[in-house]
Image (tube, rainbow over all chains, first blue to last red; front, side):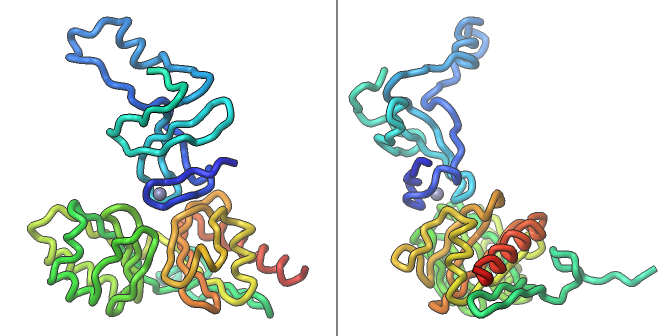
Length: 96
Length: 194
Ligand SMILES: [Zn+2]
């Protein structure tokens, strides 16, 4: 089991959290100028990195707050925890 | 037709249900008041009117509880607190808080009937909880004055350590009352027979 550091509650067991998928997705717009391809990219296509994955997590059974996590998909090591709306820290192996 | 009676979430009338052995005691706490306060600005709970009402400033440190006058105030999330105490006292403070917050963006929500509340005590209490909950309950990590929201089996739970005995207060959604009671009482029995 992973131990995840909630920015508010500190280190807690993974089962208290839920993963909300890839972080930093931005809804394209204005909506009437967005192509089908752009919508499909936004709605359906996700990165599948071997290395650093930037993800949203929520402390579902704790304080119920959302935050971002940088996690290695190779080692499951959590490399960084940062707030919603914040940019990810510079990490080796981050695709961006 | 039988007359209407107030039921506990365990459905056995309002008489408290209890288990007790040499190592651990468990009981349901009835007539316990709970309310949630959510504010836009965190300094709102430090306003003089409300501080006078609560008797204390709401805790700013995550997962801590302070004793006010009549109620305890527990941190639940950023800008969110739980008021815990005697049912009538919580209701009185809620009514007064609604007046105090009249010109502010705040939510004061009575949750007394939403929760089932249990008290677990004695030397084995920590072991029983550790078998059902992923929190670190070692005294160096969890002590009187600390609280946390976590899991009890598959149900969300609010846990608070009340004293050194140790005594813990547990609150689960009232729909999970029977589930939580079964988990806790079976864990208490197996601890006592091992
Ligand atoms: Zn948290």
